[in-house]
Length: 429
Image 1 (cartoon, rainbow, N blue to C red):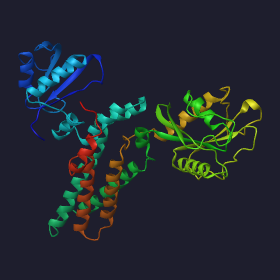
Image 2 (image 1 turned 120 degrees about the vertical axis):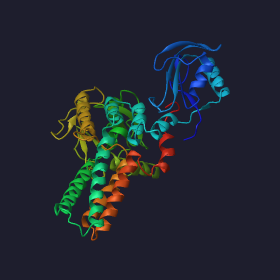
Image 3 (image 1 turned 60 degrees about the vertical axis):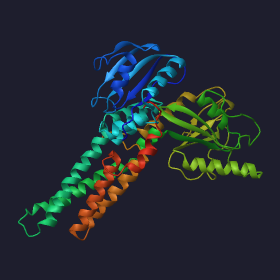
Image 4 (image 1 turned 90 degrees about the vertical axis):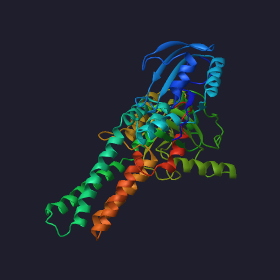
C-alpha cells in the first residue's frame, strides 16, 4: 500500500443538496487543518468554513478506528459542481490524489479492517436491487460467511498440527486416539464443505438474479404475457407468426428476487435462415434458464412445443388465451394476457419459484463463483487426504486445502485477484 492520501466524492453524481467527500491517508490531518483552520474533535460533526469555498460539516476519523484503518475525514458539502471542483482542486494542491475505484475498501482490507468476503459484500450491498439481495449482502458484510470459512480453516490448522505430530514423532508414545481423531475430524470437515457446495447455487443465483425463459409455439401469446408480467411494452405483439426473431429481455422482481424474463422466438420448423437462428437461440436460452415458462393456447392441445424444447429441470406450464374459451388442464395455470385474468395467480407461482430457487437456511450461502472454485479445490484436497497412502501426503493435502480456504477470505495468495475485484467498485468506496 502506498502512502498517498486519497480523496473522492462518495455520494451520487450530479447536482444535489449535499455531497460527501471522503479523504484517507497519512496526510488527512494536515490537509483538513489546511482547509478549515484546525482539526475538529474526533468523531464529532463540526461546522467549518473551508477557506473561501464552502461552509461544510466536517468529521475527523483518526486511524486505526476508521473505515480504511487510516487517518480519514469526511466533508459534507453543498452539492454543486463548482463546490466539489474547488474542494478537489484544493486537495490536489495540498498533495492528495483522486482515489481509484474501490480504493477505500481495498485499503480497509489491506489494513485488516475486513476480510475479502466482507469487502465483496460491500460491493453487493451497494448493487442490491431487492430486499432479499440486501439481506444476503448485509449478512455477509457482518462476517457470517467469513466466520464459517475461518472456522473451517481453524479446524484444518489443528488437523495439520496433529498430522505433523504423527510425522515428526513416530516413535513417541502418542495417544493412539490421535490418528483416529484426525481421520474422524477430516471426514466430518469434508462432509461439511461438500454439503455447503451442494446448494443448487442458491446464493449465487440471488446475487446475480434468475433467468426465466418464456417459450412455446408461435402465436400462443408469449410476447403478450411478457408485456403483462413486466407491466410495460417490452416486445412487439402481432398475429403474424414469427414476429419475435431474437431473445428480448426485461428485468422484474418476483418474490424479492431479481428475475430476467426472456421472450423467445416461436418454436417450430423454421421457414427461413433468420427464423431458424431465432429458434436455435430460443432453445439455447431455455436450456440455460433457471426456469422455463412454457406457454400454450388454452383452446388447443397442451404440450405442442415439448418435442422442440430442450430438457430442463424446472418448468411451469401456462395456458394463455382463456378468454377465448377452452379449459386448461390441471397441470397448467390458465391466464389471459389480454384481460389479465389469472395473472395474479401466475405471479404468485413465479414468486414462489424464485424464492424456492434462492432461499437458504442454516449456514450463510455461498455467493461467488470465486468462492466455489476455491471450495471445490479444498474439498478435493480433503478427499485426497482421506485416501493418502503416506502421512506426508496427507499433510500436504491438508496444507493445500487450508491454502484454498485462505484465498477466499484473503489470508493467503490473493494478490492476483485484488485488481480485478476492486475495479468493480464505484469510486469513493
